[in-house]
Image 1: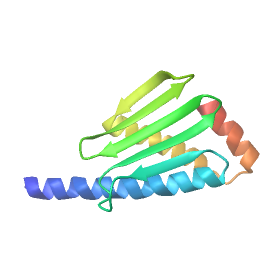
Image 2 (image 1 turned 45 degrees about the vertical axis):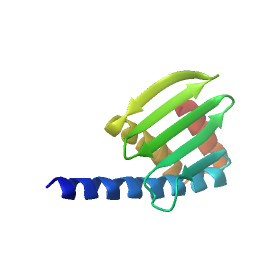
Image 3 (image 1 turned 120 degrees about the horizontal axis):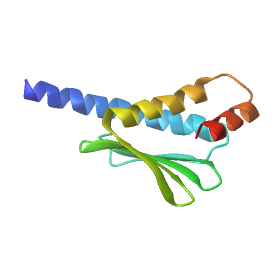
Image 4 (image 1 turned 60 degrees about the horizontal axis):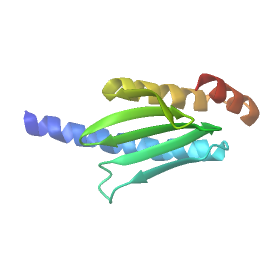
Length: 114
């Protein structure tokens, strides 16, 4: 049972890393400085970052050790979430990006939301 759970967790992390890479590409195309770095070819960890405006940064870290969402403004930590809460917050960001609107409207929406 535990080996199966470990394998499922590894697959979840790999899926999450691939989705973070795609989200970074979409955000870059919408004009937001974004990046997603992975460690090695195994896709077992990633560091995702996006700037939503002046001095407003979101960092999402995923690895076998855990998942963390950190939102900062003016170099101060506003919010830090872990686990499922962090993934839910990431989903909210992804949902806003999915809305098929003009880039300027999307930029204003993201800036207001975060």
